Image 1: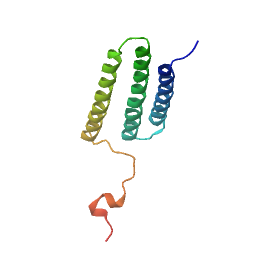
Image 2: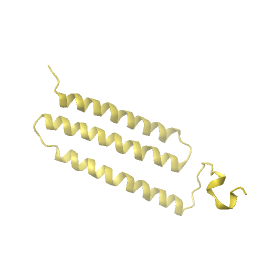
Image 3: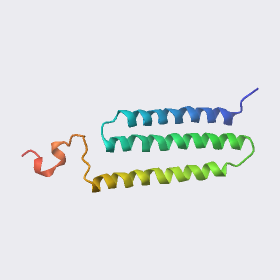
Image 4: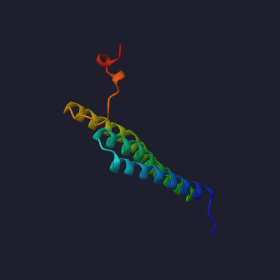
Length: 114
């Protein structure tokens, strides 16, 4: 049984997507702060899920189906993940949830040296 070039490209996309999903999961588990935990999975999982769906589009194209459903799901994920992350960050800011990240002295005008 021989693999077509599209199937090999799909396999490569799945490996790349799995890497991004793993990085996002590790970031979610390891980061100490809400804002940092929010950043890791939204960026990485968007790329990971997008990669899996693109691989699915490649396989369905190889079998003669256009893959319109996968394209629509990919667009939906790429639009909704950043918007939902932004809304969660705005809610945390509204609730005055403090970050554990240190603020550099040069970032605050009142604390600038000299």
